[in-house]
Image 1 (tube, helix red, strand yellow):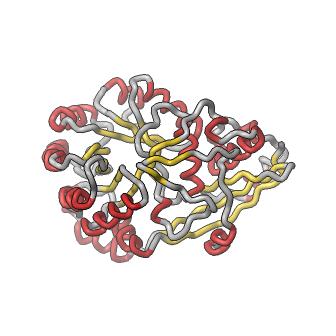
Image 2 (image 1 turned 180 degrees about the vertical axis):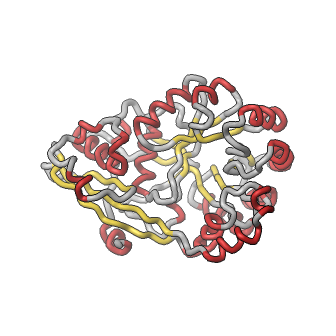
Length: 359
């Protein structure tokens, strides 16, 4: 049951060709600039975009072996050989709820599930058999978003989150998705605070609300502006979501102005924040960053299955990557993913794919 060794492999996975340029623009052209900041430095922001290179998924894959030959899978930031060596000779159960282990956490929980014969979700307690997964897009041009919505629908997704940016017309973006999406398809507009002012958020929010598919507005202005959110909520009567942490989680909860929360995927922090949200019956979704592959996505889904109020569409970007690392594809049906019933993560590595993108 003890860890015998840990192997790491650095990976660099391109995004699918049809989204490479839209993603390059999304991440490098006035990303997260407010409308005021964009107007003040339009030429400089444009130059930054033009000089940017295409993004890709840079991550480190970990295989954690135990003495009986089991292998736990994880991924994330690069750790040194010395940092990895400290875990040899220890049981993975020593790290239950220990977020300090970073990218090894999912591998340790994968091993725990294999050792106990339980799916990873059941290592955490009672768990659901299915959880929702959302499609993610950056602040793509309307024609790209229209195509992405068609791809999402074809693959079984019913929730679509995309980014609003200062250089895009978010009303046109929503209209493009609505052109091809049926009733019941949910759109979350994530502004990352770029509306800048409460007045602008209300003005544009009223235009967005005219589309019945718009389900939620995420982080329209500074998240710490509780009074501003109160005004937006009163004016729009549209659910508002924000990343837990600013303002303080307890203050945010007691304010009553945030309808949904966005949480991370570290076990202890997630369980703490989920309980805080649950105290006021607030649902949440989890969100992975750009360097998370299908391994991280499966881990996130297992965590979601074990927490009662994790009922909103969780977000990952694995569907945009050129290839996935696992032999078991993530399959979405009517917006839901069925959690593997086999022990641990319930997935296996495709080493041909791993070798293709090995750095």
